[in-house]
Structure formats: structure tokens, C-alpha cells
Length: 503
Image 1 (cartoon, rainbow, N blue to C red):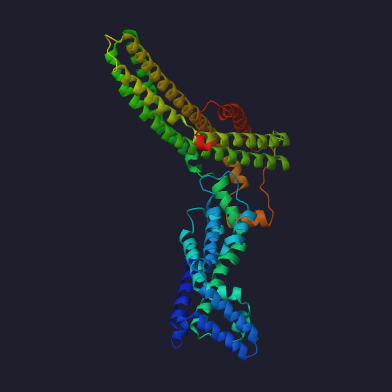
Image 2 (image 1 turned 180 degrees about the vertical axis):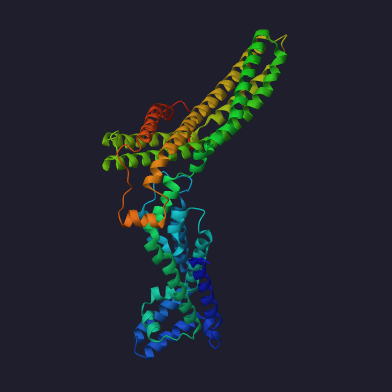
């Protein structure tokens, strides 16, 4: 049995024993917390712990609280729940799959300070996977303790004199005091398990977490085995759709040319089907761009992570004089490229989220359909000129729909090319960085943490021992530099229609 499981079992046993042993002669007091409180206050007067004036003031405060509006009475309880939820959501924002920077010790201590009792620091460190049920149980326990003692807390807040009275006249046989006693014991247990122990363990937990989730990237296994990355799998699924759309557009072009040359009004009805199909294809491309935006964000974090590790590695090698290939100029260059490339990929991501191509495709398809139907509003024999004008308008509107859809297709394909480029660099970097990771970071065990963080033992990297890998990693840096102008060009494209409400 794990230590945490044993402590949980012990906690439940103690709570059960304490509640089951509660005496019953004070059942009336158990039903009315106000009566219990007033009894204590009166005993405080009798024992000269508080004055009569303090008793009367405290009594008025208690009765005022009991008679107050429920919204006012429970406002602090709601605020507490909102605060608890906010700390958890803030801590949980960092996804295990997308970690562009290493987790810091001070950041984890911050979450321990803000919400350690309900394990906000564990949400920050472990994301969605590890210790999930303990985190949920901790939240339930804290909310339950707060609920059971909420009225008492409000009484204390309004009447601080009660604290002295309770302390001097403690009778743990009373029902309210029983709940308070058990609550203090449970709270002390939670404080030790969720605050004291983590306060000692956080430096190691952060070291271990970064080793597993940052320096050893989430798709490490797939890269080392030569498998496809998630973004590449997404692109493979979308390629067939993109190719199918392009083939259909070529067919529309061919049909339009045939109809225009022949002036065959009857054959223009075929464009009605084309227009409806192009509207559906616009919807499909819109869904494809949503997947594309997710993969752009994933690759944005991949670029940020890889260049961060690269800069850290170069700085380590130069500082420890373990290279004659690198210098601080390379270190500065890495951080500069990282800042610029990440900023441009952020723009690319939001651009993909906000694109408005689909609405333009829909409008053009509707106009094309109306124009096609308009041809049949005139008699070809008696209104030749109007028929020809409607005929030309129909072809033009169909052509506009094809043009927009093709631009939409190109918009998608160009950004998929950026994603694929990032995937190639990701694989190349991780594969060549692996030998440095093993030497510098190790396996993230407690023994290695002790040697490297406590005993300050440094990895033994001799001059030029990894010269070949250094050259390969420099190639990745050059590849990112070559990719930067392309990303800047796409991110700065001002011809893309953006949604009105998201500009």
C-alpha cells in the first residue's frame, strides 16, 4: 500500500470513529447552532471572560447574521468556491502535451501558497493524469469542512470575542464542538499531506516533471521510433479532402469553358449542382482549418520548446568550455530566433482561428445559384439580350465561387506546409539532442536530483565529445532561420478576410 493511500485510510478511519462516538444528550443544541453559541457567550459573562456589553453586542451580531438576506449570508461561501475554482483552472491551464517552457520551482510554490490545501500545485505539476482522485478528494474534503463550519466562521468574523469564550470554556462533548474538533484534525492532516510534505518535495517534483515532460518531449517515443507525429497524422487525413476539392474545381473550370463556348443554355443547369457542392466544400475546409489551428499551436509550442532547449544547451556547453564550435553569439542568436518565430506563429494561429473564407464561399455560391436560376426567367427567343446577360452573370458568379474556394484551399495548404516543416525540424532536433539529454538531464531520478541539485555534481562532457551532434543541432537552428521569412509572410498577409467580431 502506498503511503498516500495509507494516510487516506487513516483519515477516513479517524473521521468515522469521531463522528460515531458523538454523544446524543445535546441533540437540541446540535439542531440550533445559535443556541449553542449564545450558551457559550453567557458562560463567558458568568466566568468574567467577556463583559455584559460585549455579550449583548455579540448577541446582536449573531441574530443580525441569522436574519440577514441569504445572498448576503452566503456571499463569502460563494467567493471562496470561486477563488478555489480560479486557482485550479489557472493551475490546470498548462497542458502536458504542450509545454513551451520548463516548469519553475517558484511557480509551483506560488500555487502551493494560493491553493495548496486543495492541491492546486498538483494540478499545475501533473496536469490531467497523475493523482487525479486524490486531488478530487482533497477538493471535496475542503469544501465539506468549510460548509460544516461556515456559520461558526461567520460568527467569529462578526464577533471575535467568541474565540476567547470557546477557548476558555471548551466542552468537546457538545455537538458543535465535536464537528469543530474533527474539522481541526482533518484540516491538520490535509495541511501536512498537501502543504508541508509538498513544500519539501516540490524542488524534486519539478526536476522530475521537467525531465519527463519538457526535456523528453511528449512525442519523444514516436520520434525515436520513426512514427508519424500527431500533426502529420492530421495532415494525412486532410490531404484527401484538399485534393478532392482541387479536382472538383478543375472539373468546374472545364465545364464552364465548354458551356461558354457552346452557349448551350440548357447545360448551365449543371452549375446548380456545382454551386451546392462548393458550398459544402467550404464547410469542410472550415472544419479543416480548425484542426489546422490546433496543430499550428502545437507546433508553435514545439518551436518554443526546441529553441529554449537549444539555447540552454549552447549556453551550458559554452559556459563549461565543452565546445570549440559554439560561442555566446550562437546563444544570443537562438533566443532572438525563438522570440521572433514564436511571435509570428502566434499571429498565424490567431489568423487561422479568425479566417472568414467560408462565409465568402457561401455568399458566392448563393449568388451563383441565383444567377443560374435567373437565366430561366427569360424566354430565349424573345429576350435574347437579357438571357445572354443572365448567362454571363451566372458564369461570372460561378467563377468567383471557384476563385474564392481555390484561395481558401491555398490558404489551408500553405499553413499546413508550415506545420509539416516544423514536424521535420522537431524530429531532427530531438533525435540529435537525445545524447545530450541523457548526459545532462539523466533519468530524473531522486538519486540524480540529489547529486546534481544538492551535491552540485556536473555532467562530465569533454571538449568536442559531441561535436557531430552540435553540428546537427546548428543545422536545425539554420532551418528555423530559413523558415522565418515564410512564416512572417503568411502571418503578415492582409488579403485574408477576417471575421468581423474577431478583428
